[in-house]
Amino acid sequence: MTDIKDILVLSGDGIGPEVVPVACAVMQQAVAAHSVEINFSQALVGGIAIEATGGPLPEATLAKAHAADAVLLGAVGGPQWEDRPMDQRPEKGLLGLRAGLELFANLRPALLFAPLVEASSLKTELVEDLDILIVRELTGGIYFGEPRGVTIEDNERVGVNSYVYREHEIERIARVAFDLASKRNGRLCSVDKANVLEVTQLWRDVVIEVAADYPGVELSHMYVDTAGMQLVRAPKQFDVVVTGNLFGDILSDVAAMLTGSLGMLPSASLAASGKGLYEPVHGSAPDIAGQDKANPLATILSTAMMCRYSLALPDAADAIEAAVNRVLEKGLRTADIYQDGHADGLRLVGTRAMGDAVLNALEEGQGHPEQGQEAS
Ligand code: NAD
View 1 (cartoon, rainbow, N blue to C red):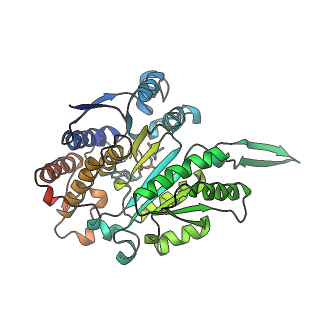
View 2 (view 1 turned 90 degrees about the horizontal axis):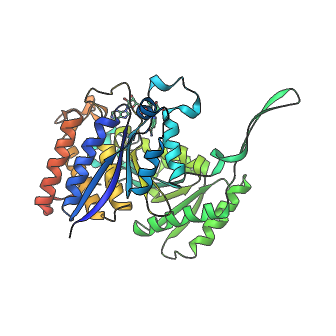
View 3 (view 1 turned 60 degrees about the vertical axis):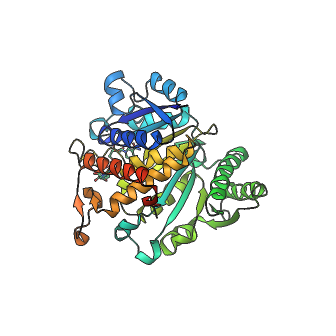
């Protein structure tokens, strides 16, 4: 019997409407091999929603997101909306979705595909076979703590933000990270600044308490400054990293750069229910929008994460990642990952051609499973 999954598609702005359809086609084909059919529906978010409805997150969009099994987002934003007040900008639509769906766990893999090893900012031997997963708490910490703001005291301005974590917020993100580590290589590094910040001493204490339920996972702790150094000195020591909102924001971008281009980076944001919002890490890239130049692989890899974390289809996820790897091995490159200095055997392609190549590679892999190759 065919299982039907409802996926809400929010293409958004800029290159979003170019990369999202390509990714949907790949996902549709990948899940078909597992007797799953996808019912894609569309809604508005970001700048396009502002133009159509006056606000970046129409109520109808949030309602559809609640009803769907998972949400795929392209990107939001663009120069035409940058002069609007902060709470009426396209990016507010994304923040509203995260809050409305209670997406507290942000997963950012830093996975280096072997054919792109030269694109890393580090030496090959340091990053070959790199596969790190950064788990960032997304709805708490200093980005949301109260009190906050700028006031006047003794005739000068004083800025305040509050770094607040409640025990239950730490416990639930720790559980997500331990679960993921137990399905990967069994190592979890919790990053804090417990030598200076009491709130992160609580973070460390709660993570240690949760660890008692995961005897198969080896837990370590690292101060955030050391973690920053270690990520660029010896990144392969990490398997899963769990940390708060602020540190996770910074460390996930550092880890991302170890793998090369922004156009290759997927992400997932999960709720306690398992519902997730999946999106490429990059923005709307207005400088290349509408030119068939955008790399669709980050969005395609986001659908692989959706298959793995929200749809319980790990084989479809593996198949998508293997197809991406195969296309890169064949030398196909969008402009952002085309390296002039290493151009031998490479072919420059656009968004649609890259999508078609992944579809073909998926078909080859499905027809000939023995040719299937894990992403490295
Ligand atoms: P950006 O990620 O859109 O672009 C940065 C650079 O990377 C640009 O040169 C762009 O051409 C390139 N790039 C990005 N994605 C690419 C892809 N898939 N293929 C090839 N090249 C790619 O960041 P920005 O320029 O700082 O922001 C542009 C707009 O996007 C802003 O309005 C910003 O607020 C918004 N933004 C949205 C999100 C989101 O929707 N999650 C994230 C970041 C930025």
